Length: 122
Image (cartoon, rainbow, N blue to C red; front, side, top):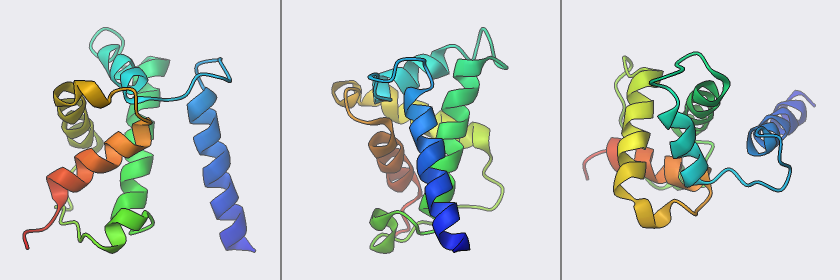
């Protein structure tokens, strides 16, 4: 029962992130994630900056726990001292270099950025 509650709480939290901007029909894409990150310099404690950081942190946690199917086939290697700021920088750099993909859902882009950066050597 606890596992079901945990799973549903993630879905609910994820739904809030998608609809957090106040528009239920607005999907959280790479473009919106990048726009949220762009507010961090002028308003580092603001809602949009926080939304981006929490999104990346939450998805990274699930990736590194092996809860995302892509990590079941690709082993990830990450130092224990990697912080949220570094994860955000990795994702921002990936988004900046992937302009043609910014229409895609943000969680796919975060997944690709982190797997690309932290995939173990073969």
